Amino acid sequence: MSLAKKASKAGALVLTFDDGPGSRLTPAILRILSEHRAKATFFLLGRNVAQHKQITRQIFDEGHEICSHGYDHVDHWTVSPVRALKDIKLGWQAINSALGINRSAYPFRPPRGRLNLISLLYLLFRKVPIVYWSSDLGDTWLDTIEPQKTSDLVNKNHGTVLLAHDFDRAENEAGVENLILEAIQITIKTAKQSRMQILTVSELLNK
Figure (cartoon, helix red, strand yellow):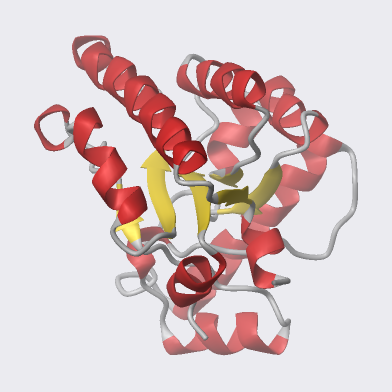
């Protein structure tokens, strides 16, 4: 069963954030999650983890799930299999270095949702969960995010794996960050009003 179907069957909202941690947006998101006593899953980029180790540790210490989005956000369809595998491993190593632990692997979300055959086989052989999403907050660009419509994303199938992004924007895109925070607030409130569970990826996988 796909993750999207599991979310719908369980009546669960799974908040996932890609491309962080960011120096501004991630701490702000963590404050919102703390206020609502909600847990989320962060698919971290190794290069950002290396720059923001303290925030990475904060995510972990506050009980959220840490997963990997690779190191350099490489598109596995456009690089060699060797480069793709190296990026996966470097992403895991960066997280371990920040947290001071030695896990062999972390659940993986491929950049752009794309894997080549070698990366796919490698992850399957290692029994690493490959995690996609069922709805997109549309927060990559300022003109594609509409916070008031997030309640529709949550209620459409009475459960969703929501994709959002917590990387730092340029100064002239600061408005996007405010819209993201507003959308996250609305999303969580909508889920609670609908009596939906708010789960991490691993919690949903174990349902």
